[in-house]
Image (cartoon, rainbow, N blue to C red; front, side, top):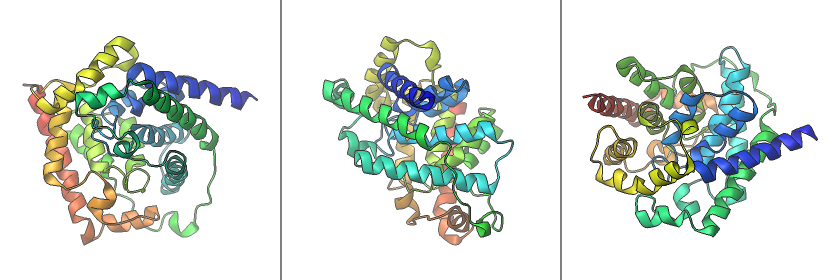
Amino acid sequence: MEKRKEAKKIARKAQWTYFSTCSCSLTQIKPFQDVFDNKDDDVLKAAMGLTGGMFLKGSTCGVVFSGALTLAMLMDKEIPEWKTADEIKLHSLIKDYYTWFDGKYGTTLCRERSKLNLWKLRGVLSCFLPHTIYKGLSHTGGTGKYIHSIKDLEFEIEMNQDSDFPNNFHCAKQVLEKIREETEIGNSTVERISIALDGGVGLQGGACGAMAGAIMAISLHLAKNIRKSGVLSNWKDFILSPGKLSKQKSFDDFFSVGGKLMDSFLEKTHSLECKDISNTEFNSLKEFQQFGGSDSSKVCHELIDFAANKAIELINKSRE
């Protein structure tokens, strides 16, 4: 009974977060932080740019991002140090969640789910239509309940996967670490839980982890503290975001810099999704790590360097 009440509480908080912040990528992280007394404002800030499929570009749904990072955040609180077996468990949880979300709501991609161009004012305003709000509330609340139901699941770890392969290829984490070394913008918790984004979110081929890592660093630097902002202020920021994303007039505005980052990345590669960029599907962490050490991953290593260097450049320009 207590767990059922807890799940309902998280669902209500997820719905309120969606309605009050216009940031779908916070809809699971913030409620689980609040309910389990695990508040970390840097984690919230880092996730903000993942809204709407990475700065509203329509890739992996922000709710999916939020759920994956939440599962990593909950595990991170309980373990002293991440081991390979822990990563395998995390990716198993995310795969379960990712598959559930895709089956329940039809797709994990924002552009397919919303059918909106959120870089256009018309697309953003459509988010305030009653049927769109209802769908968003339904999805965020339902996701909160589901994550609560699976967060403590245990998975059998194959013994031959425990420790018999190198485990040093982590696209988002490598980007975040490089940016922190060069700019001092970073957070150790954000870096640790970013392994949830390996291989396109839990090895599922979604949004590129390298790009997500660069976005999280930009967000740490420029996103506002959502706990200290009001509903009307959040709505205003969201409504004004398309103009800032496309016009990109400033180097110290969150959405303007986000727009510059997204445009530069799409000039470098033809897609925002890992499965298209890598031309590979990953069935296990071992396969992902083997890919990372092979010649086939050259394009991914280039994107890791590119994403980190572009974020560093933009952060430095914002300080001028």
